[in-house]
Length: 153
Image (cartoon, one colour):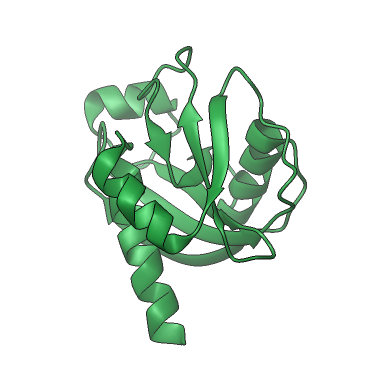
């Protein structure tokens, strides 16, 4: 069944919905990591490797990813869709569109969304993923992102 419902209802009912996320890199190939604000409804205080959120009705994954980058980090960028998959981690199953973007290292996060951010090398991120409390999406999305990049190099 297809229909227009809000993300809250889709999560509550366990219905598939679309989420667009972006792995942000800077010109030194570091990856942006952030900690979610305590005010957000889902996974407050948890760390994330990607920036993103639900795609709206009629919005492409790329449009949703660009909108979320502007809302959460205050930047305009054209994220490139790399792949999609059905993600079963998190609150409910959802289609996850994983993007990549090279962004300036001087981002201005929305404090209502982002409590902290920093740029990590891949070895630093590997350590952080083992030690810090990340959102469920972060582990699966980054594992697949790294495999995608390895296959293309």
